[in-house]
Image (cartoon, rainbow, N blue to C red; front, side, top):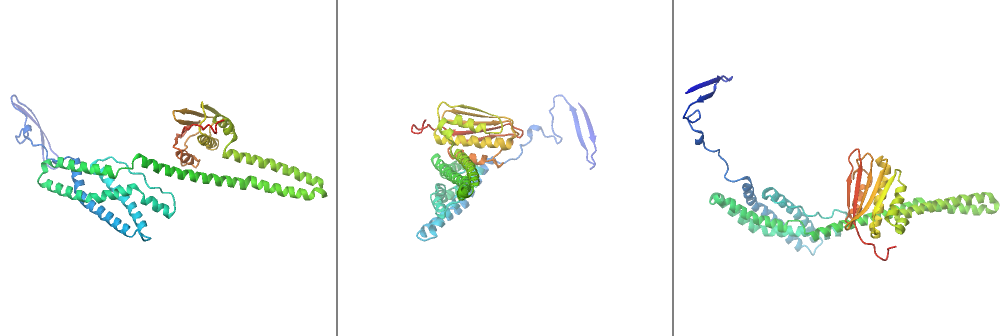
Length: 419
């Protein structure tokens, strides 16, 4: 048997040795003579992290359930008792909104401790409404009422889970992981059943209510724009025309030449007023769109763009007039952005139908960087298309090119308006 030791001396005066041993018929061992196979495994916890999370959830159930139960019983007793007074219903409405926050906290606890993947329900509308509108939307909120029911029935179950879990930690700890999994599965079912988002019908109702608000706001803004254009444009010219004709009438006998000049000037004002009225009518609904359809209308608006635009419209039939109008004004707004902001040298418009959707794609080779927060009206287009179940997608990297895709539902044109 041969042995070789190499000794090194660290600053603290101790020595560490590395041994190179060669021996026939012997096995390697540690410096204290203990074999490697005799070492104990490192100490570790008996339960995995998910089991500890489930145990923590079950133990926290009781204080959380007490808070929720006290809140909802106080809310229901006070709100129902004062319902005949002025403050009863507002108090109940505010309590239901508070119950929403309790439900939000419970969903967050279930996600963190139970690994439950659950989305948040649709929020209540945030549009400014009257007090009675706020009151009614709060009182009929299904999410708030389901949370009230959840907190009301949770207290007995929380007492059971707390007692069983605490006892099992000392008495039944070998099978506690199985007990915790079974108890938390009931909690998961309660959260899914009462705190999950509304079903598809309720979601759809909420979306339609929001879209209706967008449509109403858009229509009001369009009416204000038309009124402003009439007041500042054609109306002012017509007032000047009336004044000019009045002066010409007074000078007709005294100075016929001056009166003739005033009439000529008034004739020019009439032409300008008619042109402004045509432009205004085109902004409301262009005649070419009604008479000849989307292809001709888009070609007309493309001809007024400052860059060359190629228009391709592959439509065998015409969609409903409302969808056709939205498509036209969407492209018109996008081409205005191309002219004003893109710095492009060319652009293209493609329109086609795919199944029950009308798709519009506007491309330009400008410098890109377009977004919803750029003040170019794209956010307004997003709202308008969303109000009719449409989509609006922007792909505009810095440096270009920009590709904007709009998608609208296809609705068949009625026979009574078809041409």
